[in-house]
Length: 420
Image (tube, rainbow, N blue to C red):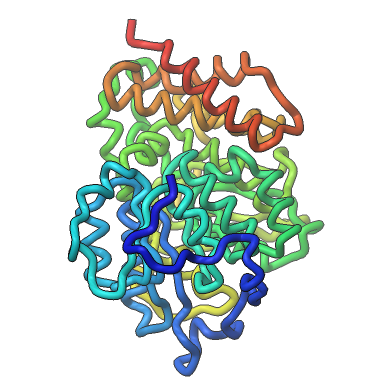
């Protein structure tokens, strides 16, 4: 269903000839130029942890950024509160039943309501949207991100699943349309910054860091007894439940390996993971001469979000700073394969390509949901993912439709698992 309320002229469709507008209707330095108009930002998943941090960056920008569109799946109450605070041109509620809760006068004057996933896909292609923040969690974020890339937009990508599922397809589409994809994940943002220190052929290794989550030192034989409440207590980051569980299993690192494979165009054997409990070094790049370039900052997502919004320039912002007047200890250790078998699955899927990433992601999403609902044990998450990955009908060069089909197949396979 596609619905836009109230009844006003529809936003231009992708075939509309009025779309012959530059992808960059602002100067390169408009994010820092006080004389330039605000950069109009569409925040997809505005009520989640990345979305709310993005709004914090927008509100702290002294008018450099404007929230042009806010979108959420069904968190209507939070979305309305955000709309009243930031007064965007558009609010999108993807879930139609949730949107029905909005009565006349729910939104501030000048803010229009759109309903449904189709409406969101059209609006992210609107020439008025300068930069798209893709922060919808999980496979659900692929459709709108694809639409933005198809329109040649600059996309600040927090939805890693887009590249995990369809990395080669998305990157080829971006090359064809001239879209720019800027990473928001703290690890990939750090890699993006470190890669500026050399040429692609000079890269020896890319090291993604991981906090190790809450179970870094817990005995592996006790992992089957881990409860959802324990898994949701992350030692350094504040995130939504799905991403927090992914950190506890280190499946987040598996997915980030696959994302990095396609985002930076590097072979899987140049990607590795190190556990870094302090979450200060967000990733490292080693060059062929032995130099290692790292990006350091406190664990605060507002910094990589702002970097993606202001790129290629930098500005002051609300993110926390390191205090170099204090003693600081930075530790690194390889991940323990007996505790975190998910990392191996990420390496395998990154090396294999094709449909492996989509199947791993779908199986993990379903398994995490089963764990949070106490239908699966903590250890079942990686076990189910491994089995589904091994047994799926692999396609080396899948279409988007084949990816969606295998996504559904993998989810169904995992639903057959349950606590014995």
